[in-house]
Image 1: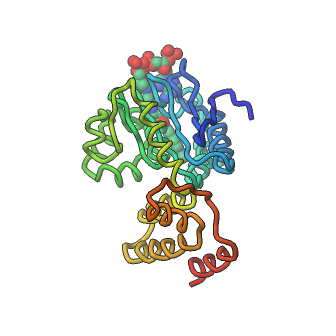
Image 2: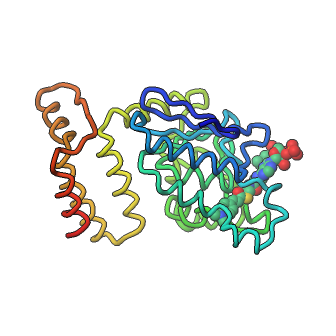
Image 3: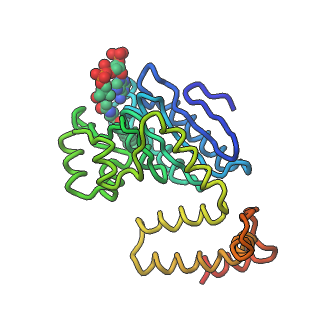
Length: 274
Ligand code: DAK
């Protein structure tokens, strides 16, 4: 599908989605978010894709929701349209791993978009912030929630209340990003991480994502039980047999992302109806 505000390239099992409103510092118009959701969903259902990278330009990831587009809206407008509610839900429902490669500003909805990905690789130039308070509003797409999980109450309160930005170095130290790389190497590093993921079993990668995300939603004992059940379920995949055989035979595994015949129904019963 052709997009106006983003660019999508699929190569070597990796879908690269680039936010492409550079003149507006990738301010997130509603159309852009809608296109982004469509692209993510298409990549999610494309059998050739095993990992997704979301990025902006070399100078800016995204400076948040488009203030020009929002400034005249009333409470009735945003509430009845459930402004940004649909994209938030759709992005959260993507099952394949998504890496955010962030250079420059990731502010407001831009920071929240990066946090909605599975992990963030940051260029040294990256700056993260939830400056909505400067506009007389509060974060609406995870800035008070995901940021608090990532960096803890003290830093989340600081950023959400003062609107200050965090450097890439502070973001890594605080647990918001997984690694910081020289700006020129950002895309190379993101591709190399995506390539590593793409070589694994997609069934296992999707299960990792589901299990880690479950930890935010449940108690430790329920989370551990869920993890154990999905661990058991991995033994119903061809990939488990191949991965272990390849290790023992000292060769590279060739994962085919397939359930073993007849096992899927059993797994569904064991995991979801126990
Ligand atoms: N929207 C629209 N235009 C923006 C923009 C934005 N968020 N940020 C920057 N721009 C535009 C500027 O207006 C300027 O346009 P021109 O004047 O050239 O036409 C151009 O980009 C360059 O900006 P500056 O001249 O300000 O450039 P500087 O280098 O001096 O500063 C900056 C760059 C990024 C630090 C600064 O522009 C800035 O602070 N921008 C605002 C960032 C911000 O406040 N972001 C938060 C937006 S609110 C929700 C979900 C999500 C959200 C809400 C609800 N629900 C689910 C309910 C999200 C809300 C937000 O993100």
